[in-house]
Amino acid sequence: MLGTSGNLSILIENEPIQFLITASGKDKGELTKDDFLLVDENGKLIIINDALSTHLQPSAETLLHSTAYKHTQARVVFHVHTTNSTLLSMYSNLEFSNLEMLKGLGFKTHDVKVIIPVIENSQDMQYLVNILPSYISEDVPGFILKGHGLYAWGKTVQEAKRHVEIFEFLFDYKVKELSLKN
Image (tube, rainbow, N blue to C red; front, side, top):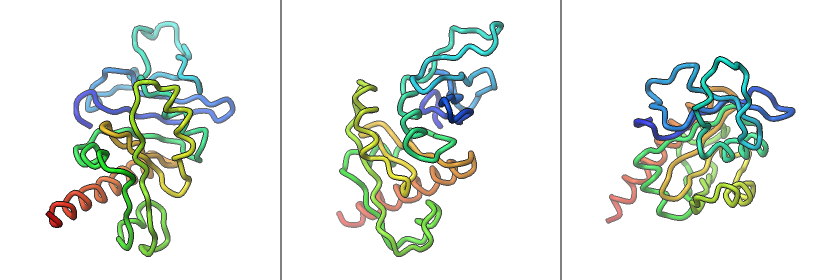
């Protein structure tokens, strides 16, 4: 994760939804435990320690993490801004099939067709929260915001990390495939 780009979250409580998310503006390569904020499903900060500085703010995209938690079995959500995911986000939904690496997303075989949704980006988070459920699938643990980056999730930190890595392999593959066609 480059500089302050992206955000990470982990579900703490299911009922009601509460999760830790990285504070806005923090360098992801230098995070400490104090850089994670507890929020509710509406993205409101939950103060857990009066001594903790409250000048930190949750990521502007907190509600997108909350939506993933509400509509999947995710317990961890990673949002990354990679060159390949941002570049490919200028296309419509990305389709992959017959690639062994698809198994890394949880499929039993490579003989599947996987469509990764590309969603039109907006600064209106409530709009995105309203349309996002129609794009989220339990089968495909991620989506791309156009011109922005990848959101990927899993039931554990390791699974979410693996999904980011598999998606990035697929995106790199697609960029190279498109360059060979030209």
